[in-house]
Image (tube, rainbow, N blue to C red; front, side, top):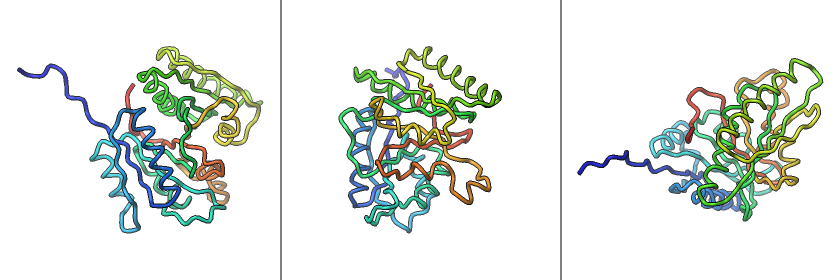
Length: 253
């Protein structure tokens, strides 16, 4: 008798962890998310002989949906494989989203409530979809989560319109998916990604979703792109990093 249903693909969460307290933290977060996303887990010990290209390909070949690694803040005295510079270089070219954690173990309510920072950028759809996955997969486990959309209120009409269009899209998406969400507005914020971390405790959120900078401007080259301020943050707050690319991995619609 032929099976009528297509065999379900086994997905995987890949942890790139060294044997430090930071690497151990990455493993613990991945174990936590393994149950949320109902995936298999693999721990890979990175070393300087492995090229990023080979790691990307291995993740693709093993149907990896999420890569987890830990980056310490710059004041940490612990020597880790993933420095901020090396980590950002790896993340920037990954098709698969990368979750960056610190040395803090996951809380009991980890990943139930999600921060979604929104500004004028056009990648709101991709960020909104990935923010939704945490809540949607938790719902399958009978846990009700919420997405906290934090948006930037600009004085300039043109910028304000772009933000409003993004919010309109997100509201329509989340209503169609029947997800719980709240919108919180802040005035003239320089870095909404950073703001999302600062206000996350107010909403009991434990992860934020960001888009990596695709093209570096002169300011980015001098001072570093905006994500350098929050990846490897001193709070160890988890950051889900996405890249602006047409083939960005999508878990489900």
